[in-house]
Length: 239
Image (cartoon, rainbow, N blue to C red; front, top):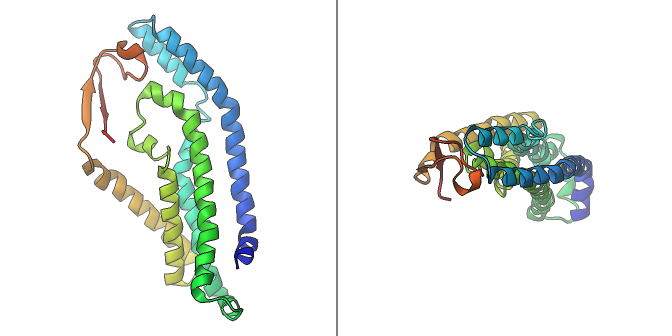
């Protein structure tokens, strides 16, 4: 059953592997140079002051602006996986009637479903995890300079968060596929449901999880790295 599930999923797996490989190559080539620029910036900020420091920070952040869009891809990647990997997983079998053949081959329904969920679900987690790992490593110098690692938009593009969103989107797609028993309605429902949950979490649930901490400090303190600017306030969550 595992072999059959893999053969059915193999074209999608090839597409996912190609996406991870392309992203990894782009980020590896540009990430090494970005890390070098950050080291240079850190040295320069140790002896600058006032407007000069702000100019240095702005100049650094302008590097590889087009590559930063790859991080934004992690916001849309979970719902894409949910739509194209999760929704058709069971709905396609029910829609075409092929489940009748699968259930008469000596494989129980529970094993049939569990195997499919394990194979594709693991592929979803690996794809999102490797992409998130590459983006998190690449963006580390930028996150240190901007000190926005815990801002909602950036938080969703780093670490384990994309993996969690991806598994949720995958599970939602599978669930709607079982409920609707049709691929296209399940795909549309996954898109709308995921967007609704993301908006609800970001704008209504997350602000109430932990009280934000606001700190004000002058530019140049702590070497200048990560300071928003003189007289400004930096707000974050103590997570």
